[in-house]
Image (tube, rainbow over the protein chains, first blue to last red):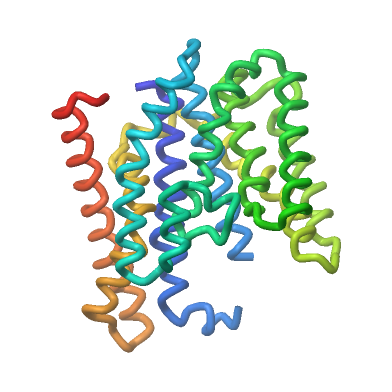
Length: 37
Length: 277
């Protein structure tokens, strides 16, 4: 596979982890209130 | 701040979509076969997700019907989370046209400019059009453009990204009364940030080894993460904040990942069996 596409895949994976894991961690826990955001 | 980061991440996603589609359709393709291929890859799984969202009470009946017909971007409100798919499907509709004119840079950007103006006029007249379809369209076009001319060209390159970011930060700090205008003023900052991150990744290509399981599962992860979270949280959710965090990260996230991977695998297997691809 083209090396370039591999780096795009990484970017895609990181973005998805951000959205699915991190964003929802903040959403479902009281983290935002803790940070007072 | 966090909302901005999420917008940047979604922007990167749209950029990548444009880039990958442009990459895989370099030769002239038939409009109908392009749409058919995209439709088969996306729509059936999307329909399952829309129905699950309805069952889980995330979206109501009208939103669900509109989502199924993919018209949510023009007759709102758009569904939670799945709005992204309805938006990207609209972009797919114009992709063959965009790819046919991308050879002429001036024509390409002028066309995009006029589409944006047209969309803004539609928004002002009808107020129904979802702003996100206007907002993310340039990201998609930039992705297509980069697939044709490389990520670094004479005009569009890292330096323009940095200048764009500086201008974007300035515009972002302008305080205006209207919410819509505030969103548009954020546009350049988000676009420049997404481009810079995209650029950095593509110019460090040698540093990555092949690992595509997550990106392979990405579409299904996006489609199904919300209902799976709701389901798992309904079954069990710790009281203690740190345990909540751990539970979501160590239990829920891997489950979402494995589930999404399997769904995608089964779907691909079925497509091969039916011989649709």
